[in-house]
Length: 123
Image 1 (cartoon, rainbow, N blue to C red):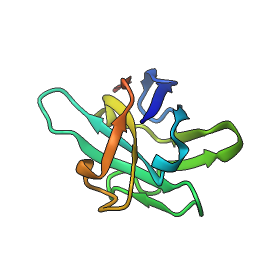
Image 2 (tube, rainbow, N blue to C red):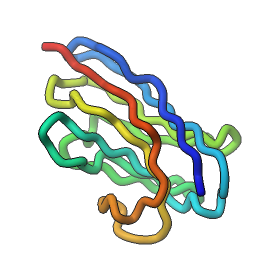
Image 3 (cartoon, one colour):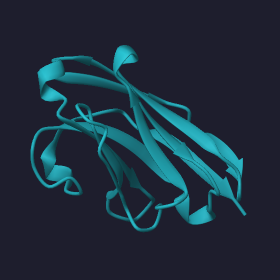
């Protein structure tokens, strides 16, 4: 099992930036890929971005490509999500998750989840 703790959420104006962090501990062998998902009120959880621990390969949802950047610091066992040019539609609870091999954009690939951190973007 992998324990995940997110931080860095908050309230920001449209056009602003936030950086989310996800500190991981526990079974490192289970952390093949790390993903970021988000869930807005009344909507389903959706894929945002993912990064592979081993080689740093990244994936992004079309809605955030060019605005968000996912990165990892292996020494700190931490994954980051840098969010720039934020929009009101980015408002959601953001979750990081640890997964094994599988479809990167599918939530079923991920077996451990953090508690989530709220991001609110005002217009």
